[in-house]
Amino acid sequence: RKEVEQDPGPFNVPEGATVAFNCTYSNSASQSFFWYRQDCRKEPKLLMSVYSSGNEDGRFTAQLNRASQYISLLIRDSKLSDSATYLCVVSGTGRRALTFGSGTRLQVQP
Amino acid sequence: GAVVSQHPSRVICKSGTSVKIECRSLDFQATTMFWYRQFPKQSLMLMATSNEGSKATYEQGVEKDKFLINHASLTLSTLTVTSAHPEDSSFYICSAARPGGAYNEQFFGPGTRLTVL
Image 1 (cartoon, rainbow over the protein chains, first blue to last red):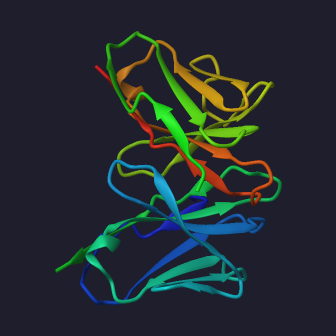
Image 2 (cartoon, rainbow over the protein chains, first blue to last red):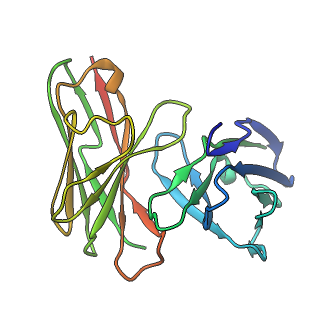
């Protein structure tokens, strides 16, 4: 079983749509959670950290459910520029290295 | 945000040659750098953790004699792929952790795309 699992997609949505991505992780000792964005053939860039209380940054909302070991990302009012691969990332106890999911591809269409 | 550079951005080489990739933190001193590898349509996989002044810690399944890591200064880590073969063709990405920053905060380099013919 992969440490971090994501639906690879692609998710094809029209501009303005709301889209949600989910992710599950296997290591219950994981302590830090993130969503990264990766454009084609580029390095990943941090989109937002994910906290148990849930957090929002503009059109993006992230949620963490530790009991279910489940992380979500909601994107409202999708823009063309949101088209990218979204990577679910976790990090464990005493370990700075990050464990990446394989990503969910989003394609926003005009 | 902090800046991490990688050089070269792209390299094409013949099978059997060695390739060196540099990772530099441009505006901070990085005591810890990480090397990842990403095959097409797959996730980034951690290869090794590089600590300045000490030996790198390699992940299970990564050959330390094939992927030589040197972190001789606080701003530079190098990854050398020795005797590269076509199966080593991949996207190699480094990241650096900034002292005093959030524990898991990492800044990624732009990556190096290696193609071995």
